[in-house]
Amino acid sequence: MKRNIYILIIILAGIIVSCKPEDFKPIGEPKSKVELLNGSWTISKVNQTDVNAANKGFPMEVQQMEITNSFPANPFTDLSINFNSVSGNFTVSKGNSFSNWPNSGNWEFDNPSYPSKLMLYTTTDTITLGISNLSNLNALTPKITFREVKQLQSGNKMIDVIYYDYTFTKQ
Image (cartoon, rainbow, N blue to C red; front, side, top):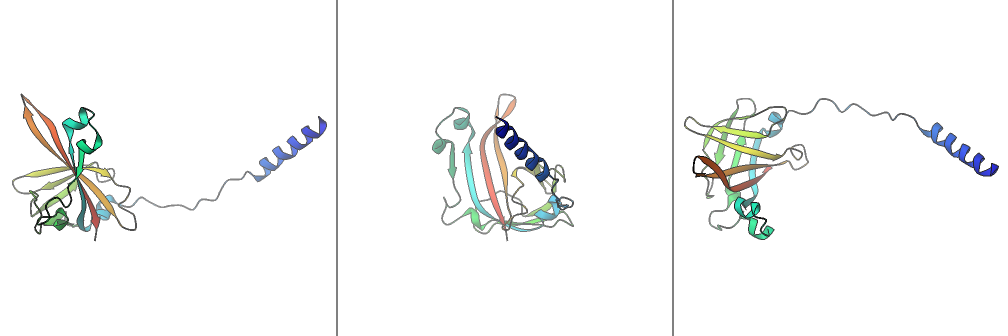
């Protein structure tokens, strides 16, 4: 029994001696999301989600479909957007893609430090896109996904009908 106590004391002493604070190097200030978005981005993937099917719990293959190359003569991958973080301007190059996005205008986040929405402004319209993931903005191959919501009027309210999730890769 004494031997077990001695072993326990030695183990505890070893743990206590080996415990020391780690020397973490400072990671610095977080990078600006506005600056990280600066540059040219091209669509790499588009998913379409049927909101009604999702709400009813239909199988995933009914709820969601990848439509990136559903129109071979008009692929979504032709669309690219260039963000200028200094001027706040954007330009869209549509190529042959089917797109209702404006050709140019101004852009901004709803919150520059913790954005959840991107607004594209023109003189006549505003497109608001949800941001689903910012963690890949600082990756080796930066990516970001924007969600466009299509709605229909039902009585006196608007209901979500289709979600388009556009995944962009930085060029």
